[in-house]
Length: 123
Image 1: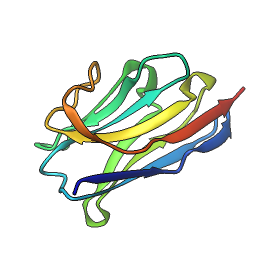
Image 2: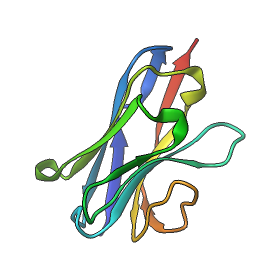
Image 3: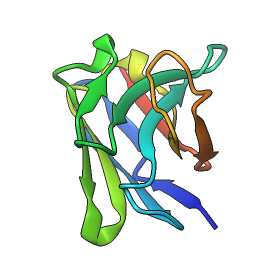
Image 4: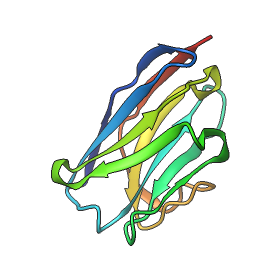
């Protein structure tokens, strides 16, 4: 059974940092693409970052480039999203997801989702 469990969200002041973790089970990083998506209140879910299973390349939406880093630890079956220089507009529920395809503009290629973790950035 495929499972993804996020953790690490919380309340932080603008300019601060958080590291989100996503523990995965039931598959290996070679099997599926993995992505981080977020959904702010009243807004559609948007792609934040994707990692390719073929070569480990990472992709970021423009608004987080240079501030967020997506990494993986195969030994721990865990992926991370390091978030620095956080802004109030980063406030959202963050989800990790896995599937055949991860693209930032659509979540249709991702079949498996975690429960989400809340990130709140105060100004």
